[in-house]
Length: 258
Ligand code: NDP
Image 1 (spheres, rainbow, N blue to C red):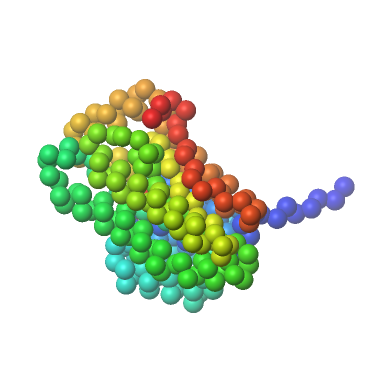
Image 2: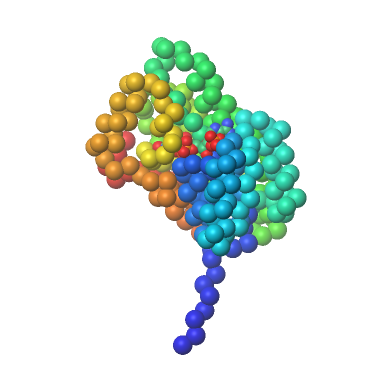
């Protein structure tokens, strides 16, 4: 009996993943690498990225770490130039870095509002500005490229005290719909990924007592998603035939009602 090597679905692809030093981004980098993609991992914590690259390489994958603050447009452009020079450009951007800092609006936590807007909106746009030309070029050459933006269930539903975060994520979902309409004709698929609660470092940045209590109660009452669950979904979106674009994917813990 002969054994045939099964081709990995993402072999030959170059995937840039933002927010890759922890949580969903980290798990997705490992998963996309296991599916055959060369992964470029972006975040600020260089040490965490270096450990991730070592782990991916140990499993036989290929990875490049670029430490970058997504809110720094020039630094993100420089990261994209490096991807172009060293890997010939990206054909998948998982635009995922984000921060969630809930607080009652009457507390006027303006510094936290700004941090969320700076990363979840401006940082996301910085990546789109830097990598869209590469996605379009790759799609023209190879017939497909992917822009997957991490939104949230908060883009759809109402979570009191999460107004600014939810607003940034509504931006991400609606932006994605519009970009899909523009880029689809150029073979670039655009997806908004909207997870419910996932156990990651995201919750560790929350300082508001009420939100912390709500999160603790939620953790008691249901089994949260894992970062790996979301990573599998990202891999699925990217592995579909080029004609298939999952526009908006909501992934919820089974026990989370809304
Ligand atoms: P984590 O906190 O584990 O990951 C956030 C990532 O973003 C880290 O890698 C962090 O790395 C990076 N990051 C933060 N600030 C910056 C910055 N200025 N520049 C570059 N990178 C930055 O959270 P998750 O994995 O949960 O979050 C990933 C995405 O998923 C976010 O967009 C979040 O809003 C979204 N999401 C999460 C849900 C959840 O319940 N966990 C639910 C719905 C959506 P570093 O600090 O090294 O820079």
